[in-house]
Image 1: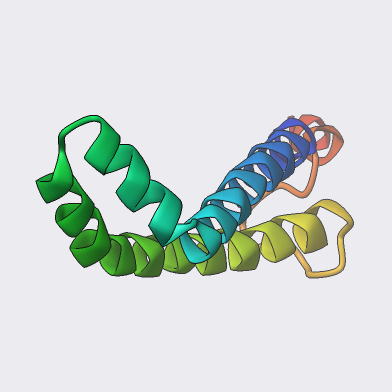
Image 2: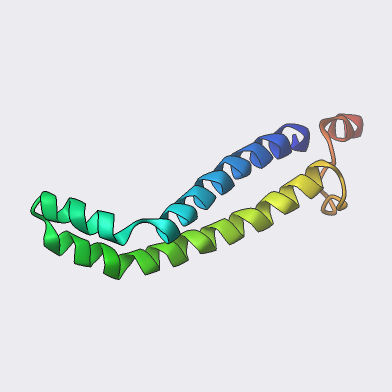
Length: 101
């Protein structure tokens, strides 16, 4: 079972890590003056203030998610490549599970 789950988990975590990294980059580097211009043009000046107040908390949350995903990705990769031993009582592969029966 782990022969199938670990590559899938590694792939999913890689995609999540990429999305979190793009979100962090976007939240750190967006142009405040351009955003203010867009909000003013659309008649939503109050929205600009809300975005400025909340973007720090959102950035912190996305960075936390990125850190968690990075740790899980490294653990998944290490388990997939058998750089860490499997947990006791957990079959290391489908072949080992089949050999028990």
